[in-house]
Length: 183
Image (cartoon, rainbow, N blue to C red):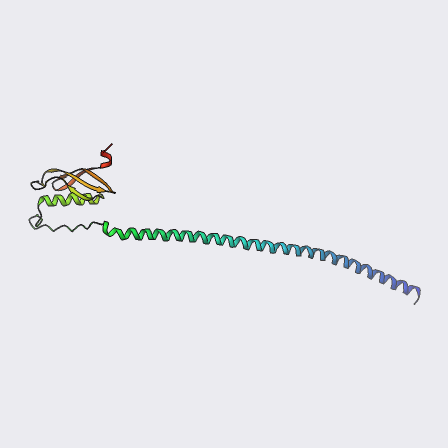
């Protein structure tokens, strides 16, 4: 080998070394970037774990909320069932009115009984019960104006007052609870 060949060989070897060194330096830069990606990956795993914990706690809170609302609804339905079981005893069965005869009179019913039935029906419609008419209805003419003294109950409170009947129909009801009558 002569000197020129040796110099060219040495120069090629030096250029190869420089190129290899530059490539290794770039490769190290890429490896550093990949190392930072690993820390990002760890951070993403931590965020995913935290999101799963938050999601589980939100689901638990929603489940507890739904369970509490269902329990409340169940209690309300039980209360409603108890109330409706007692409704049958609270409902007053009103017999259907008798059909009038062709002459316009009701069979087997006096004018006083029709007036008493009209008063009771009207007071029942207003929510009163245990109705007592204090007047004697024996000789009362239903064709005129009649004022009847009445005692009854509403909402657990006794009430007293008067009912004005005109031509067999209730025209005016004036009842007061006993609480309003006493000081």
